[in-house]
Amino acid sequence: MKNDSNLSLMLGSYLLRKAGPTAIARKRQSRLNELVAFARANSPYYKDLYKGLPEHIEDIKQLPVTNKKKLMAQFDEWATDRDVTYEKVQKFLDAPENIGQPFLGNYRVATTSGSTGSRGIFLMDAKTDAVAKAFGTSFILSGLGLRHLPVMFSARTALIIATGGHTAGNSRLKSGNTGDKPNVGKRQLFSVHLPLAELVSQLNQYQPAMLHGYASTIVLLANEQEAGRLHINPILVLPTSEGLTDREYYTVIRAFRANVATFYGSTECGLAAQGCRYHWQHLTSDWVIVEPVDADFQPVASGVQSHTVLVSNLTNYVQPILRYDIGDSILMRPDRCPCGNPMPAFQVLGRVADILNFPAQDGTAVKITSLQLSTLFDSVPEIQLPQVIQTDSTTLRVRLLIAKEANQDQVWQKVQSEINNLLRSHKLEHVQVERATEPPEQAMGGKYREVIPLNR
Image 1 (cartoon, rainbow, N blue to C red):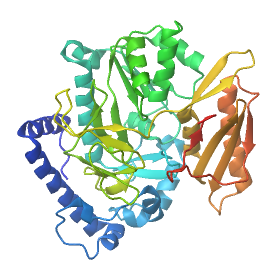
Image 2 (image 1 turned 90 degrees about the vertical axis):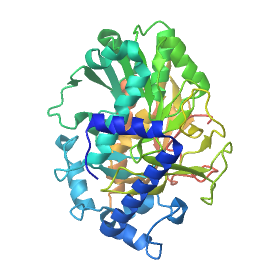
Image 3 (image 1 turned 60 degrees about the horizontal axis):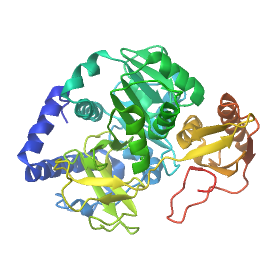
Image 4 (image 1 turned 180 degrees about the horizontal axis):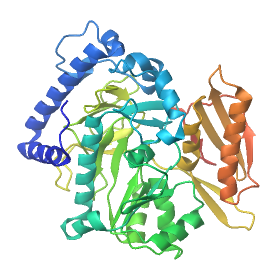
């Protein structure tokens, strides 16, 4: 549990990988055993969940499955720090000035609605952030290549994120900083909620060498670059948070003529995998365990699409994430990837970005990404499950599952106002926002899609 330096973590991981799969598996099992023992001793939730299990876990499949809903329902008992309570965290989140500041002096806090819509509150300890920083640095270094390494330390980086609220990206970037100025060293923040034309104008003025943002927004910007409205020449493009289809991936490469480095990660499991030029994600398997499973949580073979995937984050000791159903569908590569990376490789088949298309009043087309809508709900904690459906070209129907103790009308008014503000900023005042009487509905696979574009 000691907090190593960025350099020592990077070097340790490099040496471990050079030692080969057997050494990685041995280290991974040691880290799993350490985390399980700590969770049993310090988390009432895990102590009860693991009662009756052997003292030493030989196979991770011996552990029960968890998910966001279960953990959030047992929030106080889940945490291993007994000073952590839902009431304290919620009070902390209610103050905007706390974004990026340490909770209880020790933990970074991030909120997420996630692809399944159920709101989560996650605490990251120093070890979690140290490992994430080390792998983030390695990830960018490998994406840049030796020729462009000076760019990492001297050139401009544009970060396109949801700049409001305690989202993972916003809390990480503001961690340790004070004030609300957008400039952070050689980095500048751009809100994902900006109208596309305004974002294009600002990027044209800023001229970033590295472009980092939500995958759906990166695709929109690639289209703007090919249309001749965006004029930037980044060396490295980093799409995050959502999957890209092969077509979208090569569109980004073609538009920017830059290295495109993808990765797979989430608030719960951090940077879990790094993409290669063959469009496969290579697992950070010394710190993260990924289990592709069927609907009954039984393992599926390599080369077979999973119903969902269970992740275990071996870095987080304040809120242990063990066999956590993250809700993605993946396919593990059955053979070694031709890129040469020996780490297990997979493709994500269930996180492809969605785009909503609207006709503007002047006849032009306006695009809004699903993340632009879904991140609006992060600031409304009373919402347990949101769902927005585009029922026709100018109508959005909003289904909400709201906490029983909340004022239903007040919550709706806040949601309606947030969505209308977003539409107004894109000159879409004519788009209607309807309040649904029915609750959010599941897709055939049992998952809740938070944003459903027209004809999808």
